[in-house]
Image (tube, rainbow, N blue to C red; front, side):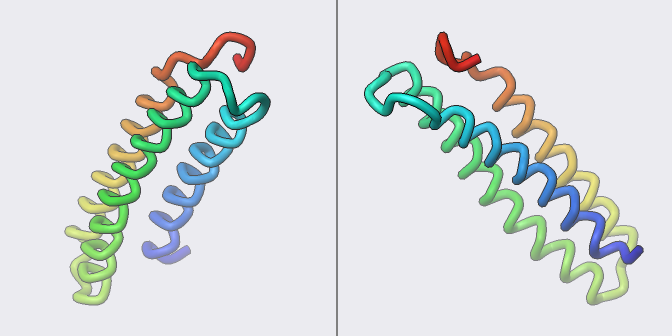
Length: 100
């Protein structure tokens, strides 16, 4: 397994979780204000994570291309922490009643 594939899998797993949560949140009536607020909050979390993730991916790729595995490992660990924080933020959102 290459070092490069690990962050990709971590990011893919995190993205899959977040997408699943958003799909779950989007089921049902679109007129529900609580649900709209929930989706808006989740979208903000995702957008913030995507910005950070894109920058980290560039840093990771540069480190790998330069043969700097130590820096690549640090970037990977930081990205894993950022993904965990995003997931924690998503889990902390109050799910609208009836959509638990």
